[in-house]
Amino acid sequence: MEQISWSDFEKVELRVGTIMRVEDFPEARKPAYKLWVDFGDEIGVKKSSAQITKHYSQDDLLGKQVIGVINFPEKQIGPVLSQVLVTGFPDEKGDIVLAVPDKNTPNGAKLI
Image 1: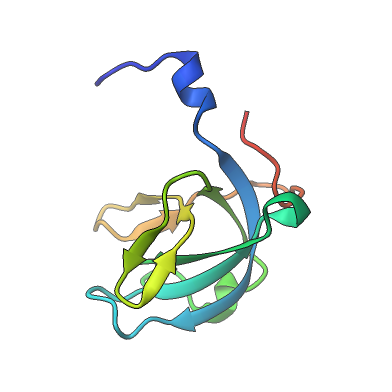
Image 2: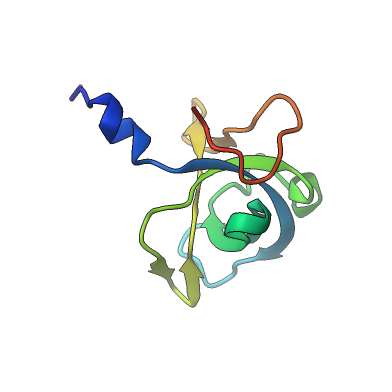
């Protein structure tokens, strides 16, 4: 594993946001949702695509806080322009489990 410096880590903008809207993403190659995540007044609402359909329904996701990387370049995923990477970990089958704060946290708070 390559080691990084503290200054490398500081460049990654990992922020807390709340999922405000969820839609199916039928055009995706693998089952996915389109997400709109509110990262607070300073950053605003960002759109993402997430392959998280195995563990989460749309109802499970509405209002859920997540951790996202907000400073990657935008990425075109089919018809969706993804503006944020919502983070998670693969389970034993490779299905994604979201990385989330364990207590309510202000939208836009930075992981430190």
